[in-house]
Length: 332
Ligand code: SAM
Image (tube, rainbow, N blue to C red):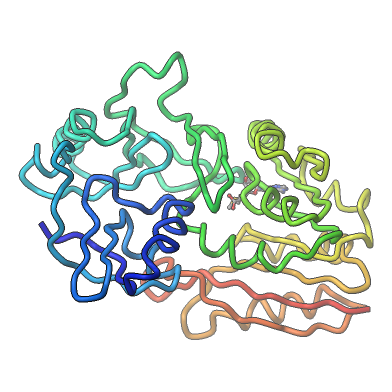
């Protein structure tokens, strides 16, 4: 059966496998194939692997002899995402969803619960509704709770109470890799910590703010799990109320609330120190994806020189709409 595979020269195979494993992209149900000097590593998400910069091709790869895949049981290859030991579907037909869920649990994949998206992300907390299609006993843990591994960090989270998207892993890595030791960083919309924890692990002192009390509990737990709790301050509240307590102190600010970040630029200007890099996420029409954000930042950042260092397209969000990030240096 044809599967998406990352193709690299044979000598880069082991290094690539480790990087793919860190991003949770290895398709464990299929075998690695070597062919004519290249190695083909089956992956679970072709788009994510491409965003990592890999060459992705579709080719026949054998299934592991001992592993029964959902496709073996169903007779077709269903589409699903994996997050920890949970599989996530996006199916409209409830009967088909249930058949796929049963096949996933009956297969040899290390999956113990299957969820279907039941709404879009919504409200201030950006949490979506889920339908639990199938779940095994998980030692009393709810079927929506899981541990996700991303770039070597573990995140405990519950999809029914907090926002989380594994699709932003590459983008978070792009931003957090820019962090220098001894920086003071603020994540204004921190969630369970996927920006905060890698920044702290690079030696920064990081303040993470979130309106959602459950996200803040997970953020504290995740800081502890990843051994960076001494460099992380987790604050529950509206960041507009919190900003004055940390005024003029940030060397780096992350603003990942793309539909309404412009409402929070005054708070960002309060937080920014004399020389600060702002990572501003936005969702805009493809005709002018960066203009509205850039204008809003210039208007809010009075007293600063504003230098847009990067205009970066993160992903396509909807037809003709792009999720983008502006990396902007504010200097006073
Ligand atoms: N940065 C995290 C990530 O990448 O997973 C979470 C991003 S999520 C799109 C936005 C987060 O902002 C949510 O966790 C939500 O609870 C939080 N939020 C919304 N309004 C807020 C506010 N006024 N102050 C602080 N946090 C807020």
